Image 1 (cartoon, rainbow, N blue to C red):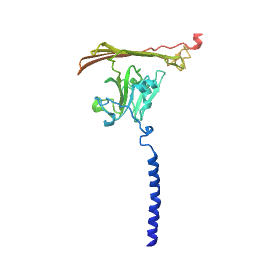
Image 2: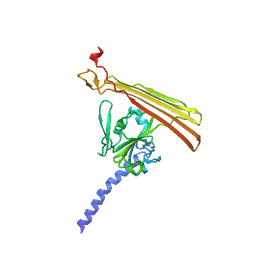
Image 3: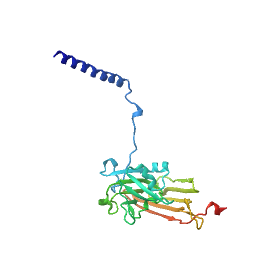
Image 4: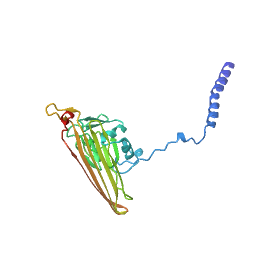
Length: 267
């Protein structure tokens, strides 16, 4: 009986020592440490056709905001997929045509299982994820079947692309000219602002990209898989009253299927 009492007493003594040390360490730490406080920016998604907080949605969704798109230099949807888990794009050709796969579910020609929606309009082409992004506000990757809200061709999920709204306060604009390997260069810009104060606003964006291919045609001597495309987008936002608005969006892309001469031919 004495051995049991001594054992319990020693155990309680040993266990109480770390708690006392922990209390002394905690009391020395400042109560308001700025290094442990992180405030994340708020994100609103429209994957369920209504603006909502993604934390309250019953679906798995990843939103890539316009700030991330601008900082990372994202030009097409497949380049934004690096921020979305369980989302992959199989790319081919110099134009970066790609087929999306969400959680292993992909698309077949003429029957896409993952559809890209641009401002609510479905792009049923299986390579629609390669469309140039112009004046984009947000890209949402929604994983899982979405047929209840978006119909067929969304068995694996969908990509929801929303355009940036025209500015209503003042005119703003931006232009960039990036370049890279294989004589690649790209010029793009956009402008936005009010036409009639508090009533009518407009915005416009354009992009022209060109790049040589990676393979040479032995017969003609020209580069294959060359890339050339011109894209444009225009918007009008009309607000006749505070609770009413109408928005017109017109966009298009023209692919230039031309072979570029090789360096030997240029000489």
